[in-house]
Image 1: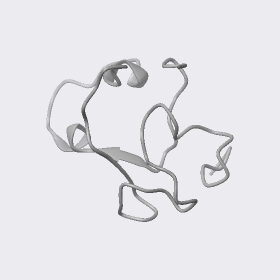
Image 2: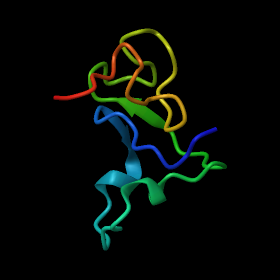
Image 3: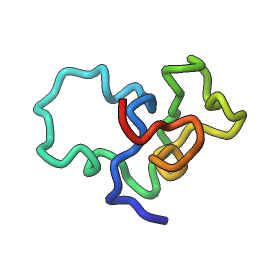
Length: 70
């Protein structure tokens, strides 16, 4: 599992909406053993537009629903 690549810009989790000091490396907030519930901002569900689960380990550029540039 590659954890240092930045996830899709549509990936969301509750921790993103908590006021805290931002980390310089946004990827550092994703833990390989994380139990966080993720969702896709495009579908507003735990599944992406392609029907696959939204998660930091799978929502990456290269996935059909995660455009390379926006």
